[in-house]
Image 1 (cartoon, protein in one colour):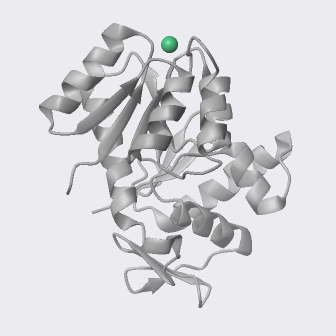
Image 2: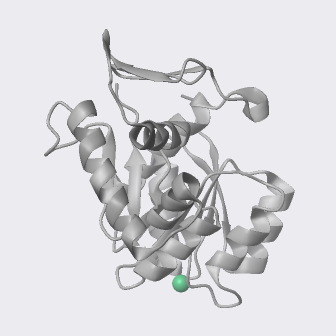
Length: 232
Ligand code: CA
């Protein structure tokens, strides 16, 4: 895989150095910015392929950076925030971030998130068109025919389970928040919709996962949402 150019946005110099040292050691190219204005400038002038974005910046909220960058670019954005800032993470994901890292994070976690994002980039088709058939490990979703298979076996899904599977597969590698998913499925997001989502997720997993207790395809992000992972 060709290593992408990464924009590192972090005002905390020791953390920024940890990230850039890690990137350098793994042959990534990178740019840095220490505030929101710098991030927007670098993103617009150098076309990085992935952005690592601290949410607590001195001049503006990281979420504002996401909103502004999203007006012209869909580059993957991985936000970095402290454990106590779950609400901020959710806001960032809803504003268009793809994934998040919680401080303090390990070098291995950082590299793992970058690999997930690189796979997403590699799977993207030019022009942003969607493939008619999605395959991931043994899972195959035929969007045109409106059905899904696991190996040779057709999955017997309810309409809500199928919609949920399509939404996750079309966003493979990306963390989707409860609010985003319920809005896509039902056009609203009430507390009991999140409860219903959990029920549909449980029944979908029973049909999809070999071991629903340790899911391979759909990852739970407690208090935040779900993500479909690329399976080898
Ligand atoms: Ca900060």
